[in-house]
Image (cartoon, rainbow, N blue to C red; front, side, top):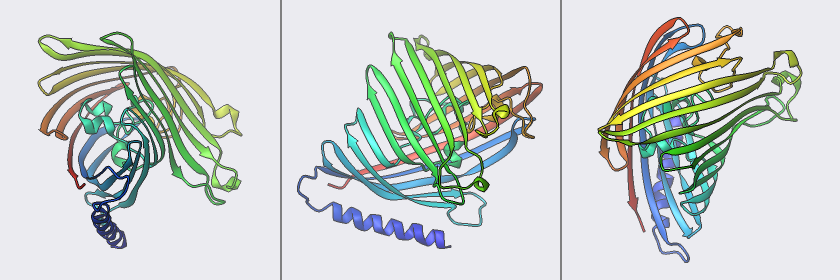
Length: 365
């Protein structure tokens, strides 16, 4: 109840702020109000040694105002709420949306609340296998984090020009105190067009737990990093709207405790993905083979670490096939329904997902 009251109070403040910002101000060029809501239903029928089945149902939404002070400075303020269906609380999470955005649309720095879920929200990359918060490959960061952790804060740099598309970020997850260690993740995704149909892609992602203020009882100092390098060949192949083939080599370094070298692992993996898109439909196939690959925040289906904490020896295989249908509801709104079949070593399982994104934007001044 207290969380709900705080959220409602935050919404009232945003309405007042919007009215104040809509009045003339020297040097201010525009004021925009945006309301954005995401509805999700994700069900995994898993019963294998690496990942348990889970059902995620809920919605998260944000209402914020962008006040453009100059051509290179935007102040963003608003509220965010996350509701899990079936929860005893009206809202499971309420957060402020506060950000300073410096730069142009093509290249800008965000300080404060990060802009995650960008590719999915734009609807340019449909498919459940590409819905992660920052578009990383699933072995590096599982897609369901977009629903479990939709609000992030820290620093983010976005570069979107014809010759390169790049995103770099630091997301602070936990503050460093004497009772707990700091936790943050940092990443970089880069796409460089080589030719009309060929793109070079490189990704790096780090999850770190540490901090000098915490004592030993707060847990170990730990690191988990992975990098991927590969190419994507994609383009229009009549009568298909789009045909793509991707291939990546991945390397991981897993250090659960810097004081225990024997528990650290260096792993390698190969990720191949093919997809066909036509009239709102998308079919995809993923093939994965790895050895000693372990990555914090990565999808357990791709890893050699079992749920009971034991490590699998030898080669680790995984395959996935999926079918997705996307319905365009408005320029910035869509509904996506998908089903997937998974082969996890000797287990054959399935999952399905419904995802809807709705956005309303209005110029106040």
